[in-house]
Length: 243
Image (cartoon, rainbow, N blue to C red; front, side, top):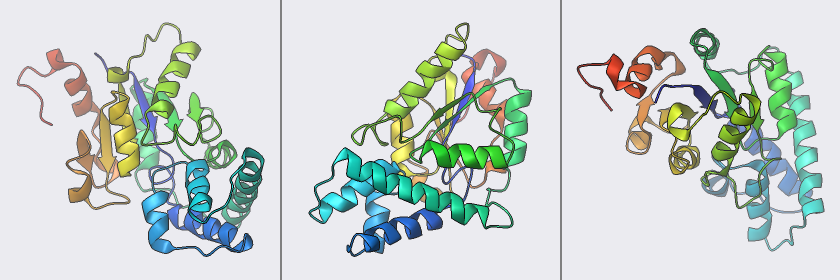
């Protein structure tokens, strides 16, 4: 089972923008005359899609959440996100991202993004940093329902399906992929989809994700694709692999 594709989370792996998302969602709640709760945000939203996060926060406050209502709030939040990001002198990308993408491309691995963010936000950032053409497939909160949000595996399974549609000769299976995630919900989603997952300690401490992910590192720069490829192809590693 050779390693054929890398499936990246976006918020918390590509870009360090969780604080901005929290602020914008709090502003949405205030505009709806609802009180935000910082602890509740961490419980309900981290690692989940914007759609699931906002829907749950509204439901907890007794609001009837129609699709039109939710879509309007999501579009308002997305527009504010792009405005806030455009005002920054430099996007808050995680250290080691450029080198990781270079090594993924050098290894001729397919690259997809599996995220709970809006597609417009993901594409805006990828265009700004010159990676849009490198990413073959994007799965966003626009593609999945609230119930299908991480920790459900739907986003990862959809990414694999779309990669196979785009590259018919790839014959991609979940076990041929590497997911890179920072949240409990994201790690669980990848594991439920049957995708080995590299946890990165960007959002939670190393020791908190060590028991959840297949492997764990502190920084993107510590991801060793050569070592991982030996794990995916045991014949390349006669002395065995470590987990």
